[in-house]
Figure 1 (tube, helix red, strand yellow):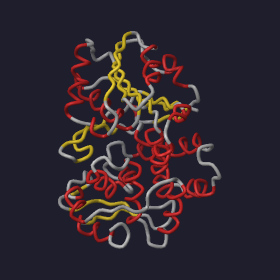
Figure 2 (figure 1 turned 45 degrees about the vertical axis):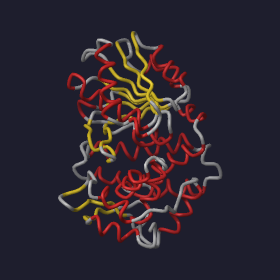
Figure 3 (figure 1 turned 60 degrees about the vertical axis):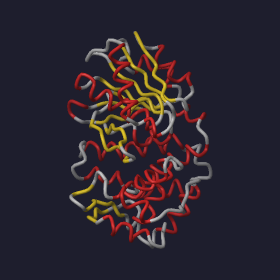
Figure 4 (figure 1 turned 180 degrees about the horizontal axis):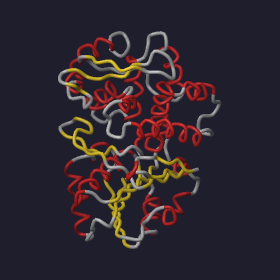
Length: 336
């Protein structure tokens, strides 16, 4: 299956195909110098398959986890690109999850003011969400994605077979982003997730439908000036939880928790059932004091206020401007 993202001069294809990793050299333009970025949690054979299809490649393997989205890792990649003799005609390929894609994409966006970037996501979360749209970033001072750039990939290659090596917790974390898409934009997808007897069997369809939702939003608002903010549903609170948790929770788990206070009370029991079915948390031990500093640094802020996304019923959403203290009030009796 091929899904096309139409962005004028920055248009690209998303290839979704079992066994696609073995066809990387055929589907992507790799006959040049390529820095292949991966992490220690990804089977080494995946990056090796991509590197083997390149004219000249260097594999850079970073420690798994959000802590690698740092200035130190960013500089490491830039130095590797310089040593490899990369020019503007060369490229970077990320093989892994959201961390690898965010970091490698940011390095590609800034080396020589921009080189080509290919995203080859191997986690469910990155396959259904973060691999497309062009957001690249690193963290700083405990604040997620605070330094970054928009840099669209030249192509995205998704091989659902790579999900076979993922632990169940990672599959669950990825499903959180699909539930997010369903709640804001596709009530039928939420029904399918809720009714499915075995979610793992239907993953290729969930991936394709989630990406179609996101690509339709990105095409209308590539730089997040308006509509694209809908993709942040669950992330305002979720990012604050993730930053304060210090690595104890996965991104998708934090998004799951972040959706609960931002949906209508009447919808919340159904969302809790769906999240539990997906193996996601619905409770957390935290405090107002732990979350408030991170809510104040939210990238969607306008002055002291934050543009939050609320869902009253599946398949629809609305934007609300709220102060961080108002958001914390929403958490009372839900997460606090």
